[in-house]
Every structure is written in C-alpha cells, then in structure tokens.
Length: 462
Image 1 (tube, helix red, strand yellow):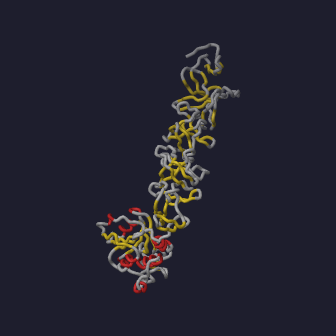
Image 2: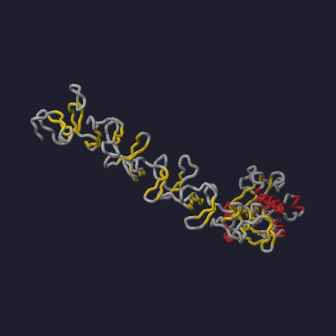
Image 3: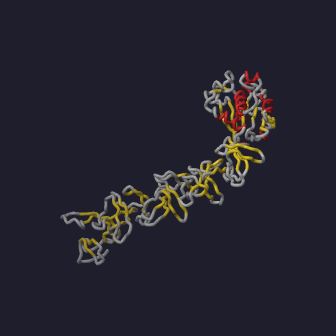
C-alpha cells in the first residue's frame, strides 16, 4: 500500500499516468477492475469502470482474467465498439468487438479477413503462413490480410483458393475472371512445364505458371519439345503448324521424324528430309501413293473403315432386312461384305448378292481372293497371343447367323486397338448398329469365342 496525505481521487503523475488515490491518500495494490468516479464525465456523481494496476488506470490492450480487453486511451474505460484501433507510435493496431474484447487469429473486418497475432493481438505486419484459431493454415500478406490467388513464398509459388482462402493441393484452379488456371501439386506448389492431370498431359507456362491458352511448340522441363494445342494439352497425331503438317507420336508425344504412322483410322507418312507429313501423290520405296490435303493415305482399308464411320448413327441391326444397309438395316457379315465391296473388292457370287452378302463362313474364301491371308486362328486359351493390327478382319466363332461375328481393326494396335462392326451390342436399339469398341474389351464381353484373323497382304494398298 502506498500512502500520501496530500492526494485523493484522480491525479495525473509526473509520467502523465492517471492514478486513483483513495480518500485516505492511499492507492490500491495489484490489478483490479473497479467502479470509480468518472475521469472524463464532469456530471456530478458520474462513475465509470476502470482497470487499475497499483492504482494506475490502464489503457489500450490489457489482459484481465485470461482475456484481452481494450481500454480507450482517452476515457480509460472499456471500449465496447466494433472498431480497429491503432495506438500512438504504432503502425498496426488491434481489432475490438462490441464486448470490448481484443480479437486475435483470423478475423473479418470491413469485408476482408485479417490475421491478428495471438501473442501480441496486433495486426500482422509481414507476410507469413499462419495457423488459425480453428487449425487451418492461411497465407497472410504484409498488410495483414489473408491472401488468395497466386502467391510467392520462400522461393516457390502457391495458389490459395479465392473462396476458402486455403492452400490448393492436387487441383486445377481458375482465378475469377480468367480463362485458364494453375495446377497445384500434392505439396501445394504451383507446377509448370509438362504436367499430367486427369489422365492428360498439359503444358503450364514457366513464366506465368498458367495453362497455355494457344497452340505452340514448347520445350519441356527435361529438354524435349512437344506440340501444345489451344486447350493447353499436348497434341498427338497429325498437326498443322505454321503452314505445314507434322506428326506427333501418340505414345511418346514427340515429333515423328520419318516413316509410316496410323492414327484415328488413317495412315500417314513422314518425310525424313523435312520431317513433315507428305500430301498429294508421292513415290515411297518405289511405289506411288496418294495422300489427301491432311496427309491421310487413300487406301483400300481406309475406304472399308469409312463405310462404317459414315453410317454411325444411321443403321439398325437386323438379319431380316437388306443385311447390307441399303434399307437402313444391316447385320454383321452383310455389312462387312458391302464395306469391302464399296472399297473395291470383287463382286460377291450371285447367291451372296441375292441374300445381301456373305455369312461369316462363306466370306472367308472371298477375303483370300481379295488380298487377305488367314494369319491366326485361335480360342480363348490362345487369344493373348494375338496382337490386333490396323486393317485386320477378325471373324468370331465358326457358326453362321447370330452366333458369328466379323469386325475390322479400325484404329491402333495391341491392347489399345479398336474394332468397327455392325453388331447387336445395343440389343437392336434404333440407329446404333455401327459400334467402335476396344477389341480386347469386346472379345471378353462376347465370352471369348474362337476366332480367325485375316490380315491384308499389303496394308497400304490403294
């Protein structure tokens, strides 16, 4: 207890502090929150509540019973107002609520989220990655506000969601107002260069980290060059670039520099001299070939495949109609007979023509007569030994009618090969008889029948 016979009530000491002296000239010791005559209200009998430390009125942010409170530096009373206060000599301040509590952690003020240091209760004045009062982490900028969008931090770039403010991980984020976005890895770092996302390879500009939004021939982070389309994805197959045609391998995505290639039903040839796809009439290996303006070879197999492609969505499966598509219906072998005939095969025998085409047994000698060889015969036990090749015609089962089937390998090879045929896959649904399915999938779906493979003696024949 401090004693003084000369002072009572509120007194300003030499340090400018407001000190309350009791009527006996003493000041209380310790910390207390008490009701005393008002410091600022001159109305007779007016009182106020003050936080004292050894009789000295406290102001600003103060701890009391485990919480932080804010006392107005002018009135010394608890400030019960939603406000942000910066004290004299400070660059940042405190956020106070209507109860007078000084807030900490992540708080919303004037429509923006800010972070207040839990140890000082002051607005954070530097960039930092902080843990909130509910456990989630956020990036705070030098102005104390939570950051969103692309952020640089400790030598790397990160993306923070514009709605949740959380670090994006293993996701593709498009900022508001932009057409393309950023890809974040499992550690939250924003990726650049060639990256795989949702089963597709994309290219992200190393200077902006954004998905590339225009066609370009780019250098990857490992040094190889790739062609990127306008959607940011790596492109394969034939590509037109700066007025010329090139071919990019579907497996490696790299530029093919020479030789033959098949892609999406068509065959192409790359000139080793300029590494471009050829067009028009060309002599290759002493043989003349003709290519269209897109570089695709005109061939017997192409015409056969196109017969089916041109009738997708137009034929309905039936064994009781024309069988060859002339009346809008067709079956397996009738359709194949007509496709091959349209491609340039010899005319079927009269009996086959009368019934709309061969069946899956009688068509076999006709295939031999028209440039095919029977290269493989198998069953379910040997099916894994057969690797489908472009242009192969495959006959399933050794029965006629609805039990047999016939297909043409129309795209790809091996496990990725697809087969075109008129079939009963959709159980006769109108307009769905022509189907292109993965060959291995369809073979297993059909319960792995015996099969016979007829391969073109010259898959490039005109």
